[in-house]
Image (cartoon, rainbow over the protein chains, first blue to last red):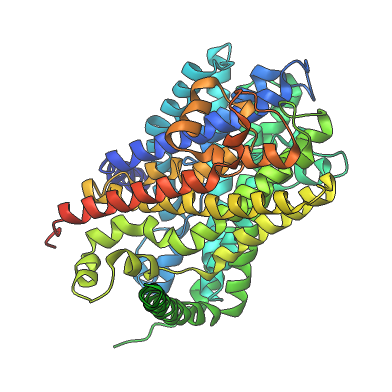
Length: 263
Length: 282
C-alpha cells in the first residue's frame, strides 16, 4: 500500500512543476466556463425551474463541470498507450506491483493536484463572475469528495481500457477520439442529462458515463437526499468496481500477448 | 504601363502557384501517411465531427425546452454557429500547426526552418498538418445546412456576396489569431494553452448570439478582438435584424475590412517576433 501512496505522491509532485501551464489551462477553463454559463443562463432566465434546476443551479452545474475537466481527464489521456507504443510497457509489467494499481495510484495523484490547483480556482472564478450555489453543509462537501473520487475511478477505468486496446490495434487514437466526444455528451458535461429528450435520458442514465460528471454535479447541488443519494453513490461505486475489474481482466489477457523482442 | 502591371501580375501568379504546389507537396505527404491507418483515420475524422457537433446538439436540446435563446431561434443560432464553424475550421486546417509553435521552438526545430530558403511562417504552417481536421469542417457544413433548412433565407446576389465575404473575412480573422498565438511563443513558450481562449474559445464564443454576453465582453469581441465580424454582423444583415448595440447598418458589411486589419496586425507582430527570436540553444 505504501508503494502506491508513494507513486501517487510522486505524480502529485511532478505536476507541481507545471505552474505556468496550469495557470494557462485555468484561464482557458474559466473562459469557457464563463461562455457556457452565459448560454445556459440566457436559456433559463425568466423560466423558473426546468427539470428541477433553476438559473443558479444550472450556472453552478456548468462551472462544476468545467472544474472537473482536468480531474477526470475529459480532454483525452494517452499515458498508457504511449508506453505500449514505445515498448516501455514491458518494464512496467515486469515490476513487482500491480500494473493496474500502478497507473491508478498515479492517476489519483494527478487528480488530487488538479482538485487543489485547478478545480478550486475555477470554482472561485465562477463565484466571482456569476455567484454559485455552494453546498449548504460540510456533510455535502464530504459526499462531493467521495463522489469525485469515484468519478475519477470510473473515468480512469474507461480511459485505461481504451488505452489498453493499443495491445491489439493501431487504431487507439481514433477510438479515443470518437469515444472522447461521446463521453463529453453522455457524461452530462455538455448539458445536464436531465434536459435530454425523454427517449434518450433513460438510456444515458443506464450508462457508466453519468458517474463521471452528472452525479458529482448533482450531489454538489444537493439535488438528491436520503435513499436516492445513496443509490447514486452506489451506482458510481458499482461502475468503478466494474471498470477496474474489466481493466484487470484485460491486463491479464494483454500480458499473455506481450512478446518481448530481444535485441 | 499596362505591360508592367501584366508582368507583375504574372510573376505574382507564378509565385503563388509555386507556393500552392509546394504546400500541396509538403502537406500531401503527411496526409498520405495519416491515411495509412484507414480505420483510425476515419475515427479521428468522426471524432472531430462529433466533438464539435455535440455543442450544437446541446443548443438544439435547450431550444426544445425554451422557445428562444436571448431572442434567437434555433435556425438563427445555427446560422451563427455554422458561419463561425466554416470560417474557423478552414483557418484551423491551415493554421493549427501554429498551435504547436511552442513545442516547435523548445525542440529547436524552428532553427532548422530558419536555415531553409522559404518563409518561416509558411514552413511553420506546414509542419503539422492533420487531415482529421476535415471533421470540424464537415460539422460546420452540416450546421450551416440545418440553418438553411430552418430559415429558408431568400438568397439574393447581395446576400450571397455578404455571406461569401463574411466567410472569407472570418477565415482571415481566425487565421490571424492563430498567427498571433504563435507570436506569443516568441515571448514565452510557457502557457501556450491560454491562447486557446482566442482560437478555440473564439470560435466557441462566436457560435452564439452576442446578445447573450454582458456589455464588456461584447465590446471586447467587437472592438478589440473583432470576432463579431466573423458572423454576428453579417448574420444580422442576412436575417434583416437590427443591431442591439445600435451601430450603423454599414458595420454589418465590414468583415473584409476588419479581417484585412487583423491580417496586417498579425503580419507585423510576426515580423516583430522574428526579429526578437533567439534560439533556445538546446
